[in-house]
Image 1 (cartoon, one colour):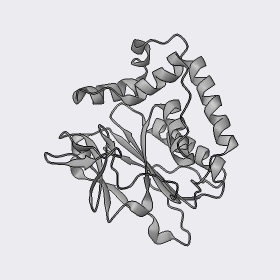
Image 2: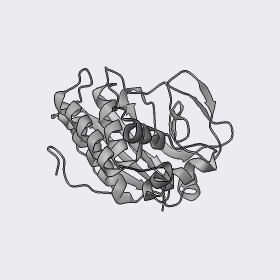
Image 3: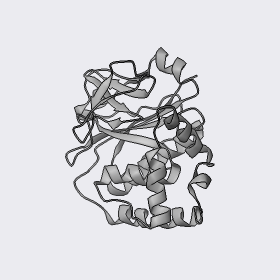
Image 4: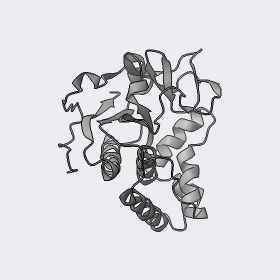
Length: 249
């Protein structure tokens, strides 16, 4: 059990504190549950986090993860990666939209080309380390930049977002997305918008893991715990606001 964290409750777990009203209530629409039956969304919200500096423990975790991945996947070709159950589930999802799962490309660069995990910021890096370990796609949002009610939904014709690079994208109908009061904040296919990303000023963060059918709920559960552990290596006093799963069943 992680320091400061209770046992995982896949239905819901909320920890109250002074800023209790800031906890984001997130639901899944009936359209999402119907279109993506068997999918899982993992939610991890932490407040009182420090994203202004890196830490030696987090950098050590990067090097340990790189070594572990190189040993775990030594000699792997792309076909071998695509036989991994979690990777295969994402590959099927992305193929529907004519895309390649970018985590596959990233892990190939680490294992086959010896690339190192990047240094962006503590919160972004904590998430990325866990993604490479579990293969579970996860976005990180600054809670203070999200507006109104939040839901997990399915994209319709006409939905779009502006990526973090400033590029406007029309989201393909059927993609899994997250909406807030101002529009789409994230899409599996096109990633996060430019309104709510983590920045150096972020002190309250929401990580959202998107798992299509075929990715076990237990894998998403373990992934959230791993992300939280990495964050706590930098922010040991982080407050757990919520950690739970939404199941499209």
